[in-house]
Structures are given as structure tokens and as C-alpha cells.
Length: 128
Image (cartoon, rainbow, N blue to C red):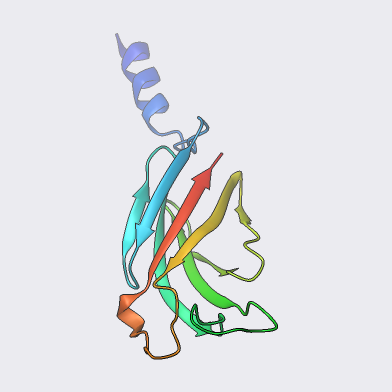
């Protein structure tokens, strides 16, 4: 009986393992929002948009411009990592075995309107 009890206690003392199953999650975040990514063992925080030089929808531009979307990936057991995603390249970032891609940033700018920082919504796709 003592061996069974000691084996059970030793099994509980082992470090938790990181999730390894498939992940395909779409998150829509406002600045300051934090959402769990189901099955990934992380949360994502949308810090905000740091510079938006996208060509307004009602203008003719030589270049499309870029907006910088800053996110934090917050694992369950370690410190957060910060990443910048750009609308100009739409290049995803890697966090361990996860891929995080910016799919859309709304609202799209118009020359006659100013976008308040809190009005942005970033759509992110997280996959493994």
C-alpha cells in the first residue's frame, strides 16, 4: 500500500507537459483584450496598433502602407513574449510550435476619418 501511495505522489510531482495536439483558432481582439487559445496552453493579448500608414480606401496611393499590430503571447508557465505583426507583409510569427498570423485589421482607414486607438479589431489565426 505504501508503494502505491508513493508512486501516486511521485506521479503528481512531475512537471506538466505542454499541449501538443492540433490547434486552429481564430481570435478577434480589441486593444487590451486577452483571450485563451484552446488547446495551445497560451493566451494572446492585443497591445494595440503602433502606427497605421495604410493607404486610405478613398485615396490613390503609390504604396499600400503598413500598420503594426503588437501582441503578447502569454504561456501558462513562463514569461510573455512580444511580437509585431504587419499588415504590409502579413508575415506570420512563430512562438514555439505555434504559428500566429494576422488575418485582418479593422477598421480600414478613410482619409476623412480618424481611427481611435480603441476602435481597432485584429483578427488572428493561431495554428499548430
